[in-house]
Amino acid sequence: MRKRARRGTGNRAIRLLSLGHACVDVYQGAVAALVPYFVAERAYTYAAASGLVLAASLLSSVAQPLFGLLTDRRAMPWLLPVSTIVGGLGIALSGLGGSYALTLVFVAVGGIGVAAYHPESARVARVASGGSNTAMGWFSLGGNLGFAFAPILVAVVVGVGGLRFSPLLVLPALVGSLLCLPVLRGMRRAAVTTGAPAPPPARRDDWPSFVRLALAVVCRSIVFVGLSTFVSFHVRERTGGGMAAGTAALVVLYLGGAVGTVLGGRLADRRDRVTVVRRSYLLTVLAVAGLVLVPGPGIYLFVALTSAGLYIPFSLQVTLGQDYLPNRVGTASGITLGLTISVGGLFSPLIGRLADATSLGTALAPLIALPAVAWLLFRTLAEPAPPARPAPAAVPPAVPPAGEEAKG
Image 1 (cartoon, rainbow, N blue to C red):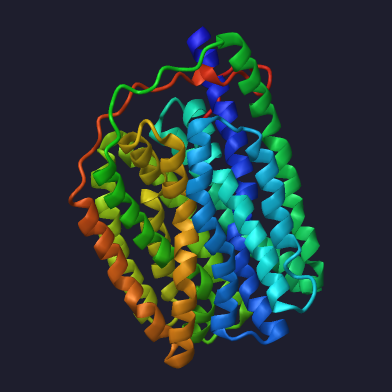
Image 2 (image 1 turned 45 degrees about the vertical axis):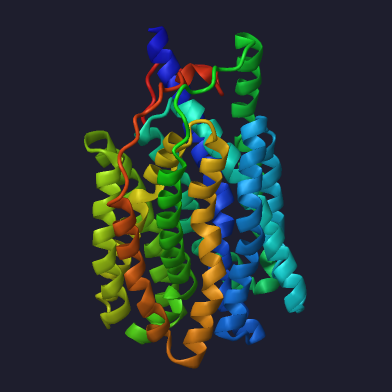
């Protein structure tokens, strides 16, 4: 009975963390969703609009590993509510004023908030999940749903009232900061109860394998962020549709990721993670080729396949990174979870400049090769020996235990 109650406790904590993750990652998706409105209201070029994605990513790329290093030295769970608010405020204020420089600053602040959130949240989720691939998949699913909700939220708020209504976008941040508080209270009670921290892992860090994994993460990031920024424009060109057709493609890109993340965790419980990730990148090569080259409504099928292929590895790469660096869980989480978005943003302006000089289809064509590179990198990786899983009971009840076992 006690074991069953502990498992239910961990599941409740993961659900709260997953919902909080959604409230943070809605701001990563919101940057790409806001791009068409900046183009429409302020007449930005493709290069200028993609510069906003760069602003959200540049400081995040630098800050993410730094926050990871800090959380490896000392647990900082208070970062979860604080970074959620900072990320939300930055994006919410980006629509105010007509200054491009000021907009870049606000978007960059939002990126720093998101960067601060991911390493610590992944560490807390690992403890709450007991190291389960499926549970980490549910945690990652929250972020994917946040991405998927972003274009809908932006369409409702900014599409109706214009960029001057962007301050309303702060609402998810307020909700997310409140959701994580019960989990943090539970962690404080756990610290008082247990008294001593857990002993460090006995295994050594495997940096060569982690570097190859990180390079594959970079390839995935460039493809995903490039498509997130430009798929709405590309689908409108290929289908002859309007703003709604482009927004629908962005929603499909993000919602397909929700399916892929859960599927990845389930598959990894049956096969090893490296094999699952390797095969998903092969699928992605064909899917991205179809997205770039196929005209007409059929393009939506390839958008969905691309999304699933890119997201099956998502949570698996997080746990693989943590297992390759068992003594540097924060650093591994900061790179494999947070940099999956921010590094791709560094390349987005290059795609924009090439699109301005040639055509959008030509600019997106190089993205077909990157999943193949990720596949080659994974062919050199071996499944790491999993460390002893932390007990889910390390996170006490976020809410009073219900008498039944929760799903997830």
